[in-house]
Image (cartoon, rainbow, N blue to C red; front, side, top):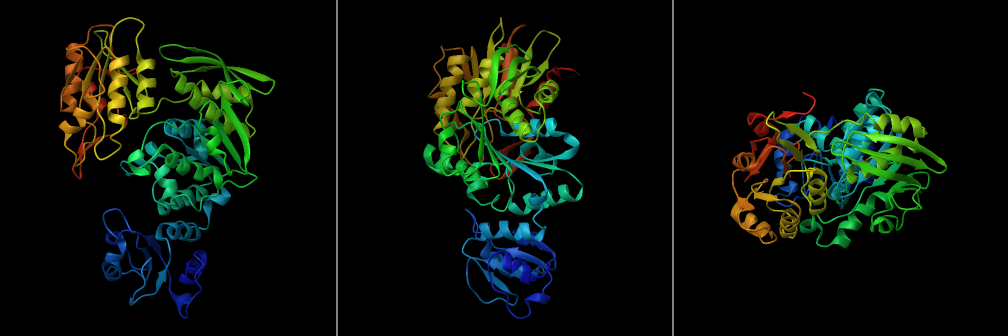
Length: 479
């Protein structure tokens, strides 16, 4: 593509000669620039990309996009917001692929990953591409929910070119605020729930909700907003939204309801009702939160004219996801559950779901460093209230002092002496929980889920809860 076409995408009139400047790639990391790339200088929290313009040009950049004006030996496109510009540039560079795909965005505090994967399952895994936590891990993108707009548009273009029909995207609040999804043509936006998280970034629950609302404010009138009507924030999500609305939940008045739920230790039964029609569902995943995730995925499928019986049949084979209520057992009668629960609400759901009919519930968890400190005592209180034994440990401390993190979690714990302890090393903490457990007990290992690393400082150190448990003799159920 030539620079004149890309300049038009961000509203910049072409200069003489720009029609001869061929752009071979888009890049926001000067270290990865290839000859002919258009380098977009993003001002970040730590480094300003504008300081690396010279390095990018030395690497072969054919042109530069920046919020700063200056003199450069290659064309410079000055913009007001480099992140917003990158979104438009990436869409134009790849031929606006989401306009050719049935594109769904899923936002909310908890459940995004599961809802995305189950939407793909119902619509057809071979006809669907997911951009989200687990799919990004498979792409080599660690600790990323919504990747940069450049990656989003590239993956969408690859899906279009491969003949894929559906694109399902996890829309994080950070991704929405940072314009990563600005140029995505969403046909459906999904809201799962809003609970306490990311207030270190957004400052308040109101600002956090406002960030989520971006997805729905940008939906066209012909699009559909799929909303969890049971959540108190559902009304706020629809403020300024002109799209059609499909509501889901347990409450009377929801368009799509889960009726008469029966939650077992390994699955959930309920009746899926839509208007005057109903279909029984046997979901092979436990907990109310699993049913709500299934309802969200089912509501999206209904917008694609998938019938209610077809949806019920496909939910019966909804896949288990890595690190999401993942059960492992040991011959001596111990059960362990790995779950990504890293927010107060998610931890509470996981603890209630994992509670055995008899036996004790032990939980091993921590809280990440350099993130929302307010949730630490809240999660301590929840663990103390719902678990019989709590072991506090590390969970991506980053540059923060781990002992200080544990102090803040411990401030909320109200268990009698001997029912809780601190074990700094996470693998040792899991081992300690196993030592304290008895046959019939359940161990919930919460917070890291699918992650295969521990972030300490700037380093991603190899680590996996599943690998630790397998070394202790546990095997995933079904193996």
